[in-house]
Image (cartoon, rainbow, N blue to C red):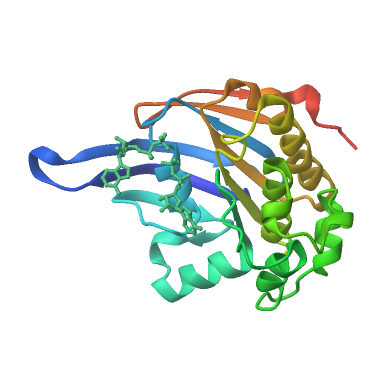
Length: 229
Ligand code: ADP
Ligand code: ADP
């Protein structure tokens, strides 16, 4: 199965004359194991799409399949389980607990996960093995984002959703964070979906989905990046 199959997905916020059509019939397949970038201007509906396939919100019409499961048929409890067991989230602002160390921030998640990694292994994976005892205030922005990535992958999610993960970082630091995401995609075979308005993010993607005004304009596959093994 693909990671996601999306058919005719629409999302309308509000109703009547004030209604906002955030998604206007999206058809999309996201193959398992790829690193996919969803690129488009602010307000084009990217976060809305990510929130729906991430199980944080529901569409208005259309179908979303996660592997072979119809997400619109899932109960709220099933969606909560889906988020807990299969999905990692990374946001623009790292949302770390300031009073906890890097290790403890990651351990918050591994304590309730089904088959987690050791927090130290997760921190090692993002290159922060030597920062486990540091508090967020003692870390740079890029390091804090890497702790947030370690926290998201420590539960070994099937999919990792990243909403503007480099939005608060300078371009060099942003690139190093993207390399960490690429490394996770390759090492753990995690499907990674990055939502962004920053075109530079697209360089290392297997597939770039150009989004505008609630719909897909173009899908560009980067075949050279995938190793036929
Ligand atoms: P993007 O992530 O590409 O910036 P969004 O998905 O956040 O776009 O927003 C798409 C459109 O939906 C925008 O016009 C936005 O104002 C609107 N929108 C997003 N969330 C809500 C909401 N909760 N209520 C009403 N309108 C919303
Ligand atoms: P935007 O893309 O509009 O700048 P954000 O990236 O801040 O918005 O958030 C995208 C969506 O994810 C929002 O709908 C928000 O409610 C949700 N979100 C943000 N942070 C968290 C969080 N820590 N846990 C769950 N949902 C969150």
